[in-house]
Image (cartoon, rainbow, N blue to C red; front, side, top):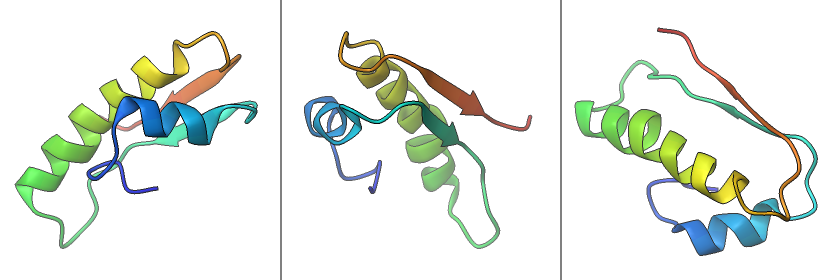
Length: 65
C-alpha cells in the first residue's frame, strides 16, 4: 500500500483483520526529502491513527533514528 496515496479510511479497511500490523519506517537511498516527510512522518501518523481503531488489535512501529 502506498502511504503517500491513501487516507486513514482506506488504510483502516486494508488493516482490519490483520494482527499484528507492523510498520517499518525508513528513509532509503534515492528518495526525496518530501518522501521522508510523506512516509516517515505523515505515514507513521496515518498508520497510528488507523491502528487506533477498535478493529485493529495490535500494531508495532519499527524505526531507526
